[in-house]
Image (tube, rainbow, N blue to C red; front, side, top):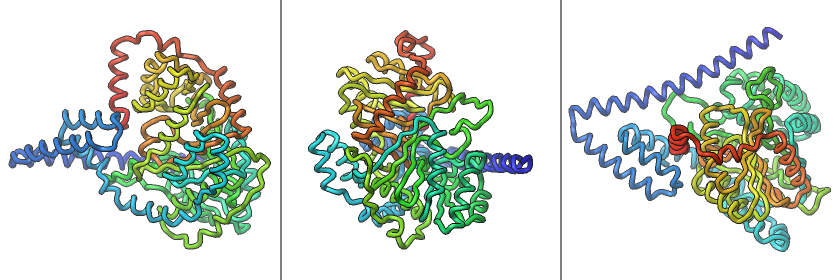
Length: 519
C-alpha cells in the first residue's frame, strides 16, 4: 500500500511539473517575441507604425466580429493599453487559421456520423402537439447542431455521486459488447481503482473498453504511465489535447465532457469526474462536502452519446472503419412513454454557442419558476439580461452556488454578479456544507437540463461539453425535490447582497467582471 501511494504521489508531481513547465515555456515564448519586437523597433521605427496599424485593424475586426460584447471589450482595452502584447495574444487565441487543422479534423469526422443522427419526424410531430415552444427548442438542437430528440427512454436522476457511482459499477458488470468512458479528469486512486478492476475483467471477457481523458483536467492525477497501465489490461486509452510546451491556440480548448456508454444501451453523465473528491472520499477535504448530480439514461437516446464519444475518439486518431457495430438501433421499450430526451454536445470549433443558447431558450420560456445549480456564475450581459427579464416577468428564479470555493479568484468573480442579480429579485443560495459542482437547470415542473455545462465563459465558448434536455419525465420531479432539499442546506445571501458594498470591493469586482471572458 505504501509503495502504491508513493508511486501515485510521484505521478502527481510529475504531471504537475509537466503543466508548470508547459505554462512557463509559453510565457517565455510570448515574452521573447515581445522583447524582440522592442529591440527591432529601436533599429526600425516603421515597426511601431506597422504595429499601430495592426492594432487599429484588429480592434475594428473585433468590434465587427460575431463575438459577444462581453468578449470584445476586454480585448479592445488590452490592445489599447498594451498594443504589442494585446495584438500577439489576440492573434494566438482567436485567429481561426491557427485552429484550421483541428476544425477540419472534427468537421470531417462529424460528417461520417450524420447518417446515425436522423430526427424521427413522428417524435417531433408528437412534441409539437403537446408544447410547440418546447418543440422549437428541440428543433434548434436537431436542425442547427444535429442532435435528435428521442422517445423510448427511461431516465434516473442521481442527487448524489455515491448512488451514481454504485449504479455505474453495477451496469459495467453487465456490459456485453463495449464500454466507452470520456472524462475531463481521471484520478488513478481508490475510486477509479474500483472501476479499473471491473473494466479489466470485462476486457478479459472480450468487451471493447475505451477511455478518453483530458490532459489538463487530469494533469494533477495521472501521467502517461496510466496509458501503459490500461494497455496491460487491454483497455484502449487516448489523451485529448496533450500539454505541449509550445504556443498553441488549441491548448485553450479542453474536453470538459463526462460520460460512460455501455453497449449503446445505457449512458451516464453529470458533473462528476472519476476522482476521489467527486465521491467525497478525500479525508479532511478543503472543499467540505462535494455536492454533484447526474443522470442515467437507458434507451434510444444513448445513440447520441455513442456518436459523441466516437467523434472525439476518431478526431484524436482516426482509426475506426466500422461504426455499425457500435450504433445499431435498439428500439428500446421504455417503461416511461410520455417523456422526451435530447442529449447534445457543444464544440468550441464552430460558431454555434450551443450550451449557452439552450440555457437562454429555457430562461426565455420559463413561466413560473427557474432553478439553477452551478459551481461558477460568470455571466455574459445577454445571459444576465435574460435572467433579470424573466424575474421582472414574475418568474421565481433561484440560483445555487458553492459555499466553499475550489478556485478563489473564480469564486470572487461569481460573487461579483450577485448584487446586480438580487436587485431584480433573483435569489442566491450558497451551499454551506461545501462545494457545489452540479450543473442542472429546471423550469416549471416540466423541463430540465443536466450535464457538464457551467454558467461561465469557458463552458460556453472554449470547452467541449455535453448535456441532456429532458421534458415530461418523472425524474424532473426528483430534480425539483433535490433543489428544495438543497435550498435548506444553503444560506440565502440575497438580502446580504442587496446592501451597498464598499467602494473598493465594487471597483475590484468590476475589474474582475471586465476581464472574466479572457480567463
